[in-house]
Image (cartoon, rainbow, N blue to C red; front, top):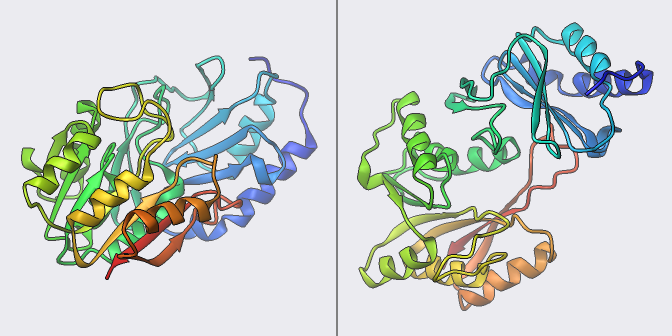
Length: 309
Protein backbone atom coordinates (compact mmCIF):
# COMPACT_ATOMS: atom_id res chain seq x y z
CA UNK A 1 0.00 0.00 0.00
CA UNK A 2 1.77 3.12 -1.22
CA UNK A 3 0.78 6.59 -0.12
CA UNK A 4 -0.76 8.61 -2.91
CA UNK A 5 -0.43 12.33 -3.50
CA UNK A 6 -2.08 14.32 -0.72
CA UNK A 7 -5.74 15.04 -1.38
CA UNK A 8 -7.23 18.28 -0.04
CA UNK A 9 -10.68 16.73 -0.51
CA UNK A 10 -9.87 13.81 1.79
CA UNK A 11 -8.24 16.02 4.40
CA UNK A 12 -11.18 18.44 4.34
CA UNK A 13 -13.72 15.61 4.63
CA UNK A 14 -11.85 14.12 7.59
CA UNK A 15 -11.59 17.45 9.40
CA UNK A 16 -15.28 18.15 8.84
CA UNK A 17 -16.21 14.71 10.18
CA UNK A 18 -13.99 15.23 13.22
CA UNK A 19 -15.68 18.55 13.93
CA UNK A 20 -19.15 16.99 13.73
CA UNK A 21 -18.14 14.56 16.48
CA UNK A 22 -16.94 17.22 18.90
CA UNK A 23 -19.51 16.20 21.56
CA UNK A 24 -18.02 12.69 21.53
CA UNK A 25 -14.46 14.03 21.70
CA UNK A 26 -15.42 16.16 24.71
CA UNK A 27 -17.23 13.39 26.59
CA UNK A 28 -14.94 11.78 29.20
CA UNK A 29 -17.24 8.75 29.50
CA UNK A 30 -16.65 7.41 25.99
CA UNK A 31 -13.44 6.68 24.10
CA UNK A 32 -14.65 4.34 21.37
CA UNK A 33 -16.64 5.54 18.34
CA UNK A 34 -16.48 6.04 14.59
CA UNK A 35 -14.45 9.05 13.53
CA UNK A 36 -15.26 8.91 9.83
CA UNK A 37 -18.11 7.15 8.01
CA UNK A 38 -17.02 7.20 4.41
CA UNK A 39 -20.28 6.19 2.75
CA UNK A 40 -22.00 9.42 3.75
CA UNK A 41 -19.00 11.65 4.46
CA UNK A 42 -17.37 11.76 1.07
CA UNK A 43 -15.05 8.74 0.78
CA UNK A 44 -16.97 5.56 0.02
CA UNK A 45 -15.12 2.47 1.25
CA UNK A 46 -13.21 4.28 3.99
CA UNK A 47 -14.13 4.05 7.68
CA UNK A 48 -12.06 5.23 10.65
CA UNK A 49 -12.73 4.30 14.26
CA UNK A 50 -11.25 5.41 17.55
CA UNK A 51 -10.39 2.80 20.17
CA UNK A 52 -9.01 4.99 22.97
CA UNK A 53 -5.39 5.68 21.84
CA UNK A 54 -5.77 3.72 18.58
CA UNK A 55 -7.13 4.88 15.23
CA UNK A 56 -8.25 1.96 13.08
CA UNK A 57 -8.64 2.72 9.40
CA UNK A 58 -10.71 0.23 7.42
CA UNK A 59 -10.21 0.39 3.65
CA UNK A 60 -12.60 -1.71 1.56
CA UNK A 61 -11.42 -0.83 -1.96
CA UNK A 62 -8.65 -2.21 -4.18
CA UNK A 63 -7.24 1.21 -5.09
CA UNK A 64 -4.29 2.60 -3.19
CA UNK A 65 -5.18 4.57 -0.10
CA UNK A 66 -3.96 8.11 0.57
CA UNK A 67 -2.21 6.82 3.65
CA UNK A 68 0.09 9.77 4.31
CA UNK A 69 -2.80 12.24 4.18
CA UNK A 70 -4.69 10.13 6.69
CA UNK A 71 -1.70 9.68 9.00
CA UNK A 72 -0.78 13.36 9.03
CA UNK A 73 -4.34 14.60 9.48
CA UNK A 74 -5.17 12.13 12.24
CA UNK A 75 -1.97 13.00 14.10
CA UNK A 76 -2.94 16.66 13.95
CA UNK A 77 -6.49 16.00 15.13
CA UNK A 78 -6.00 13.43 17.89
CA UNK A 79 -3.44 12.14 20.34
CA UNK A 80 -3.12 8.67 18.82
CA UNK A 81 -0.45 6.21 19.89
CA UNK A 82 -1.23 3.91 16.97
CA UNK A 83 -2.68 4.47 13.51
CA UNK A 84 -3.08 1.46 11.25
CA UNK A 85 -4.98 0.39 8.15
CA UNK A 86 -6.88 -2.85 7.74
CA UNK A 87 -7.32 -3.58 4.04
CA UNK A 88 -10.35 -5.86 4.00
CA UNK A 89 -9.96 -7.29 0.49
CA UNK A 90 -6.28 -8.11 0.94
CA UNK A 91 -6.78 -9.06 4.61
CA UNK A 92 -3.69 -7.10 5.61
CA UNK A 93 -2.80 -4.63 8.37
CA UNK A 94 -0.31 -1.84 7.73
CA UNK A 95 0.88 0.38 10.54
CA UNK A 96 1.16 4.10 9.74
CA UNK A 97 2.19 5.19 13.23
CA UNK A 98 3.21 3.25 16.34
CA UNK A 99 2.78 -0.52 16.51
CA UNK A 100 -0.32 -2.51 15.62
CA UNK A 101 0.09 -6.27 16.11
CA UNK A 102 -3.07 -8.11 15.14
CA UNK A 103 -3.41 -9.71 18.57
CA UNK A 104 -3.31 -6.40 20.50
CA UNK A 105 -6.10 -6.00 23.07
CA UNK A 106 -7.36 -2.69 24.41
CA UNK A 107 -9.88 -1.88 27.13
CA UNK A 108 -12.29 0.85 26.03
CA UNK A 109 -15.22 2.51 27.74
CA UNK A 110 -18.71 3.45 26.65
CA UNK A 111 -20.74 5.44 29.17
CA UNK A 112 -19.49 3.55 32.19
CA UNK A 113 -19.22 0.14 30.53
CA UNK A 114 -15.84 -1.36 29.71
CA UNK A 115 -15.09 -3.75 26.87
CA UNK A 116 -11.93 -5.54 25.78
CA UNK A 117 -11.50 -5.20 22.02
CA UNK A 118 -9.06 -6.33 19.35
CA UNK A 119 -9.01 -3.47 16.85
CA UNK A 120 -6.87 -5.26 14.27
CA UNK A 121 -8.23 -8.78 14.53
CA UNK A 122 -9.19 -10.42 11.26
CA UNK A 123 -12.84 -10.46 12.28
CA UNK A 124 -14.81 -7.80 14.14
CA UNK A 125 -13.05 -6.03 16.99
CA UNK A 126 -15.48 -7.51 19.51
CA UNK A 127 -17.70 -4.44 19.84
CA UNK A 128 -20.17 -3.26 17.22
CA UNK A 129 -19.95 0.51 17.55
CA UNK A 130 -23.18 1.21 15.68
CA UNK A 131 -25.16 -0.64 18.38
CA UNK A 132 -24.35 1.94 21.07
CA UNK A 133 -27.92 3.41 21.17
CA UNK A 134 -29.35 -0.11 21.47
CA UNK A 135 -27.03 -0.89 24.38
CA UNK A 136 -28.24 2.28 26.07
CA UNK A 137 -31.89 1.31 25.50
CA UNK A 138 -31.27 -2.17 26.91
CA UNK A 139 -29.57 -0.70 29.95
CA UNK A 140 -32.55 1.56 30.61
CA UNK A 141 -35.13 -1.24 30.25
CA UNK A 142 -33.59 -4.24 32.05
CA UNK A 143 -33.98 -3.56 35.76
CA UNK A 144 -35.22 -6.67 37.57
CA UNK A 145 -35.61 -8.65 34.34
CA UNK A 146 -34.40 -12.12 33.41
CA UNK A 147 -32.63 -11.54 30.11
CA UNK A 148 -31.79 -14.06 27.37
CA UNK A 149 -29.09 -12.79 25.01
CA UNK A 150 -29.07 -14.87 21.81
CA UNK A 151 -26.24 -14.81 19.25
CA UNK A 152 -24.40 -13.15 22.12
CA UNK A 153 -20.93 -12.86 20.54
CA UNK A 154 -18.75 -11.07 23.14
CA UNK A 155 -21.76 -10.22 25.28
CA UNK A 156 -21.95 -6.43 25.02
CA UNK A 157 -25.75 -6.34 24.81
CA UNK A 158 -26.21 -8.66 27.76
CA UNK A 159 -23.62 -6.73 29.73
CA UNK A 160 -25.64 -3.57 29.14
CA UNK A 161 -28.64 -5.43 30.58
CA UNK A 162 -26.66 -6.57 33.62
CA UNK A 163 -25.38 -3.05 34.20
CA UNK A 164 -28.98 -1.85 34.03
CA UNK A 165 -29.96 -4.06 36.96
CA UNK A 166 -31.11 -7.24 35.23
CA UNK A 167 -31.91 -10.04 37.69
CA UNK A 168 -30.13 -12.59 35.49
CA UNK A 169 -28.48 -12.59 32.07
CA UNK A 170 -27.91 -15.74 30.01
CA UNK A 171 -25.68 -15.51 26.92
CA UNK A 172 -26.03 -18.12 24.16
CA UNK A 173 -23.66 -18.34 21.20
CA UNK A 174 -22.17 -20.99 18.96
CA UNK A 175 -18.53 -20.01 19.52
CA UNK A 176 -16.69 -20.83 22.71
CA UNK A 177 -14.03 -18.15 22.22
CA UNK A 178 -16.72 -15.46 21.90
CA UNK A 179 -18.30 -16.56 25.17
CA UNK A 180 -14.92 -16.49 26.89
CA UNK A 181 -14.56 -12.90 25.76
CA UNK A 182 -18.02 -12.22 27.18
CA UNK A 183 -16.78 -13.61 30.50
CA UNK A 184 -13.83 -11.19 30.39
CA UNK A 185 -16.15 -8.27 29.69
CA UNK A 186 -18.32 -9.20 32.68
CA UNK A 187 -15.21 -9.24 34.85
CA UNK A 188 -14.06 -5.85 33.54
CA UNK A 189 -17.38 -4.40 34.68
CA UNK A 190 -17.38 -6.24 38.01
CA UNK A 191 -20.59 -8.02 37.02
CA UNK A 192 -21.22 -11.59 38.23
CA UNK A 193 -20.91 -14.38 35.69
CA UNK A 194 -20.59 -18.17 35.82
CA UNK A 195 -20.81 -21.11 33.44
CA UNK A 196 -24.61 -21.17 33.70
CA UNK A 197 -24.64 -17.68 32.21
CA UNK A 198 -22.53 -18.66 29.18
CA UNK A 199 -24.12 -21.37 27.05
CA UNK A 200 -22.55 -22.64 23.85
CA UNK A 201 -24.88 -24.17 21.31
CA UNK A 202 -27.04 -23.99 18.23
CA UNK A 203 -29.68 -21.31 18.83
CA UNK A 204 -32.22 -23.15 16.68
CA UNK A 205 -32.03 -26.23 18.89
CA UNK A 206 -31.56 -24.35 22.16
CA UNK A 207 -34.80 -22.37 21.82
CA UNK A 208 -37.29 -25.25 21.43
CA UNK A 209 -35.56 -27.10 24.26
CA UNK A 210 -35.89 -24.03 26.50
CA UNK A 211 -39.61 -23.81 25.64
CA UNK A 212 -40.15 -27.50 26.44
CA UNK A 213 -38.39 -27.06 29.77
CA UNK A 214 -40.72 -24.22 30.70
CA UNK A 215 -37.99 -21.59 30.92
CA UNK A 216 -39.28 -18.04 31.19
CA UNK A 217 -37.67 -14.67 30.59
CA UNK A 218 -38.65 -11.03 30.81
CA UNK A 219 -36.48 -9.95 27.88
CA UNK A 220 -34.98 -11.65 24.82
CA UNK A 221 -32.27 -10.11 22.64
CA UNK A 222 -31.99 -11.40 19.06
CA UNK A 223 -28.88 -10.27 17.19
CA UNK A 224 -28.33 -12.89 14.48
CA UNK A 225 -25.47 -12.50 11.98
CA UNK A 226 -26.46 -11.88 8.35
CA UNK A 227 -25.27 -15.35 7.29
CA UNK A 228 -25.24 -18.70 9.05
CA UNK A 229 -23.02 -21.68 8.24
CA UNK A 230 -24.62 -24.93 7.15
CA UNK A 231 -25.27 -26.78 10.41
CA UNK A 232 -27.90 -29.43 10.95
CA UNK A 233 -31.06 -28.01 12.45
CA UNK A 234 -30.80 -24.48 11.17
CA UNK A 235 -30.98 -22.63 7.89
CA UNK A 236 -27.76 -22.43 5.85
CA UNK A 237 -28.31 -18.84 4.69
CA UNK A 238 -30.03 -15.77 6.02
CA UNK A 239 -32.17 -15.76 9.11
CA UNK A 240 -35.59 -17.17 9.87
CA UNK A 241 -36.87 -14.25 11.93
CA UNK A 242 -40.34 -15.78 12.10
CA UNK A 243 -39.01 -18.89 13.86
CA UNK A 244 -36.87 -16.83 16.21
CA UNK A 245 -39.78 -14.54 17.07
CA UNK A 246 -42.15 -17.44 17.67
CA UNK A 247 -39.82 -19.08 20.18
CA UNK A 248 -39.01 -15.73 21.81
CA UNK A 249 -42.73 -15.09 22.28
CA UNK A 250 -43.19 -18.50 23.90
CA UNK A 251 -40.34 -17.79 26.33
CA UNK A 252 -41.50 -14.31 27.30
CA UNK A 253 -43.64 -13.41 30.27
CA UNK A 254 -46.43 -10.91 29.63
CA UNK A 255 -45.03 -7.36 29.50
CA UNK A 256 -41.67 -8.82 28.54
CA UNK A 257 -39.83 -7.35 25.58
CA UNK A 258 -37.91 -8.76 22.65
CA UNK A 259 -35.28 -6.70 20.85
CA UNK A 260 -34.40 -7.79 17.32
CA UNK A 261 -31.53 -6.58 15.14
CA UNK A 262 -32.28 -6.97 11.43
CA UNK A 263 -28.79 -7.48 10.06
CA UNK A 264 -29.87 -8.25 6.50
CA UNK A 265 -30.99 -5.84 3.80
CA UNK A 266 -32.64 -8.18 1.32
CA UNK A 267 -36.04 -7.07 2.65
CA UNK A 268 -37.40 -3.81 3.94
CA UNK A 269 -37.58 -3.16 7.66
CA UNK A 270 -41.36 -3.16 7.36
CA UNK A 271 -41.38 -6.68 5.89
CA UNK A 272 -39.12 -8.03 8.60
CA UNK A 273 -41.24 -6.41 11.29
CA UNK A 274 -44.36 -7.93 9.75
CA UNK A 275 -42.75 -11.38 9.87
CA UNK A 276 -42.13 -10.97 13.58
CA UNK A 277 -45.62 -9.64 14.29
CA UNK A 278 -47.28 -12.46 12.34
CA UNK A 279 -45.13 -15.13 14.01
CA UNK A 280 -46.24 -13.92 17.44
CA UNK A 281 -49.95 -14.08 16.51
CA UNK A 282 -50.23 -10.43 17.38
CA UNK A 283 -48.88 -10.86 20.91
CA UNK A 284 -45.83 -8.68 20.17
CA UNK A 285 -46.52 -4.98 19.76
CA UNK A 286 -43.92 -2.39 18.64
CA UNK A 287 -42.31 -0.59 21.56
CA UNK A 288 -39.22 1.17 20.16
CA UNK A 289 -37.31 1.57 16.92
CA UNK A 290 -33.63 2.35 17.05
CA UNK A 291 -30.80 3.13 14.73
CA UNK A 292 -27.08 3.81 14.97
CA UNK A 293 -25.55 6.84 16.67
CA UNK A 294 -24.60 10.22 15.25
CA UNK A 295 -21.15 8.90 14.35
CA UNK A 296 -22.89 6.68 11.74
CA UNK A 297 -24.64 9.44 9.75
CA UNK A 298 -26.68 7.17 7.50
CA UNK A 299 -28.30 5.51 10.51
CA UNK A 300 -28.11 2.11 8.84
CA UNK A 301 -28.61 -0.06 11.92
CA UNK A 302 -32.13 -1.48 12.06
CA UNK A 303 -33.37 -2.62 15.44
CA UNK A 304 -36.90 -2.91 16.81
CA UNK A 305 -38.23 -3.72 20.28
CA UNK A 306 -41.62 -5.31 20.91
CA UNK A 307 -43.54 -5.82 24.12
CA UNK A 308 -45.65 -8.90 24.75
CA UNK A 309 -49.25 -8.13 25.62
